[in-house]
Length: 163
Image (cartoon, rainbow, N blue to C red; front, side):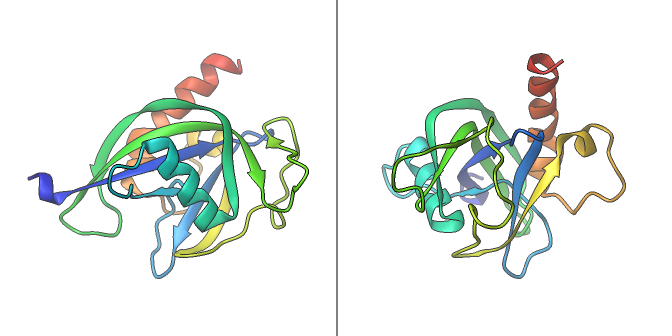
C-alpha cells in the first residue's frame, strides 16, 4: 500500500487580498498548491524552498508554519494517494530583489512580474479565500487534496485569525 502513496511538500501562500496562490501543471486540469516531492534525505522545509524556486522563481522565507499533514486521491495519478506535509508561507522573496527585500502578506504582490511559471508549471492563479468559503460556482477545478482536505483547515485558520 505504501507504494501507492506519493509524498510531497506543499505551501499555502495567501496575499494581502486574502487570495491563495495555486498552480496547474502542464497537460493537467486541476489546480493545486505549489510544492513537490522531496529528494532523498531532504528536509520538508528545504524541499518547499527548492520546489518554489524551480517552479515559480520565488522562495519562501522566514518562518514556515506547519498547517498539517493531509492525504487524498492524487489528481493526476490514478490509483495513487498524495500525502502532503503542508506549510503556511508568510513571506516570499524574488530573485529580482537583489537587495533582499521581501514580498510579504503586507505587500502588494504583482500578478505577473514577481511570480513566473517554470519547470512543469503551466499556470498560476490567485484564488480568493472567499470563493472557497462560499463554494463559488466559477471555481477552477481543484485537486482533491486541496479541495477536500487542505481548504477546510486553511479557511478555519483564516477565520480564526482574521475575524
